[in-house]
Length: 105
Image (cartoon, rainbow, N blue to C red; front, side, top):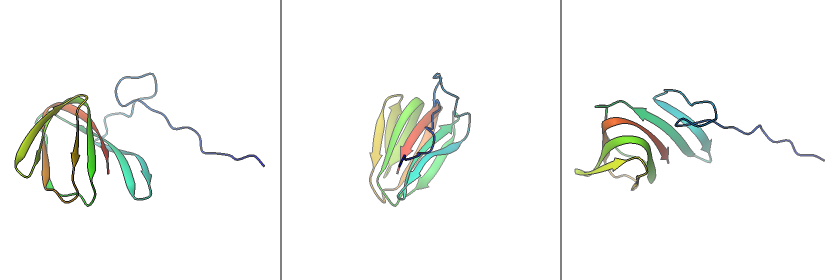
């Protein structure tokens, strides 16, 4: 008995050799067992108002520069940085320079 698996999924979130993910504002790359990996883009000056997450959230910055504020404490992050936002913590985002991020929640 030979197992058949779905085809490999690939793409480029920056400028790699695979097809580009494009300029979507948000693209769910993987959703499994209630968890998601989300690719998001932000334009310079764009703001995500204060909100809360029902799980811990890992944000990884691929390109750009942002300020992520948790409980009124701002943290500037740039390409290569990550932050972990704890469950329930109020947080917001202000994009200082066009950015692409990965979110795991």
